[in-house]
Image (cartoon, rainbow, N blue to C red; front, side, top):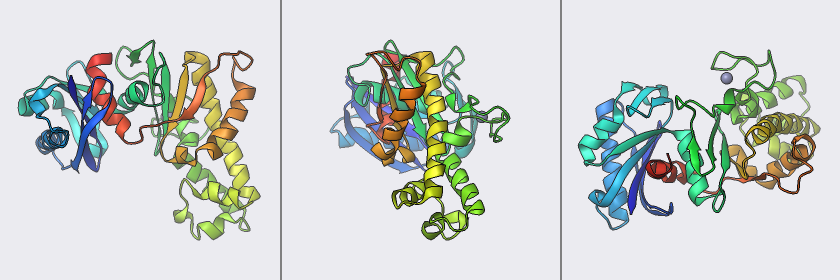
Length: 314
Ligand SMILES: [Zn+2]
């Protein structure tokens, strides 16, 4: 059985032909154009290319799964708002069905990525997984008892917007002190810049001569070189990250919690300190059965694989 998965991003439309076990048999990527009709055309093109790379035809696939950023209505297959795609109230699932002749479902991109990791990545062989992605924001999704959990209106698991510092940093959602204002790569960069402004002698300035040069790696590199200011930034970052991770583990008790996104490329330099804080914070810290905390395994393919399998696991 074959399934088409599409990961819609602001820059590219990525497509893959996937089997029922989540194995990616062929993939393709085309630039993401502007305008709803052009985007639907690009999705159809990318799907055909991916099938061809797998030595198959699109018509051999059972369905198409679309992973979209922004807010969506999966029941009607409508992208409600996706600002970085310029889509507003667009019946994208129907538009893709018209072009490819296959039933098409729509899912939020963070949920799709979690499903991909569950089936073919960090969650393989387990019944429950939470996937957290640390990027511009903090995305998250959960598969519980083998089912993708979305909440009744498909807006559940927006854990980036749980508050960890009440009255803290202003967030794009309108609240103050949201987890993503601290634990995203953007939050880490902001903390490094604030530390640089009060510590002109920090080695952070050697790696980033201006504040605009700071990225998600800068603090890790400076701390590695022995800079105490960068280390303090990272210590605080890990505490904030773990505050949210411990909240998720305490509420959901997943077997696996995987962390993806640019910051997770630090691997054990991040996960080692994270595990140490969770050993102190987690409610079930003394249990012999604890949530396995690891890095995500599929990288950018998680969205494609998960989108393809949404019709199987919803
Ligand atoms: Zn928020």
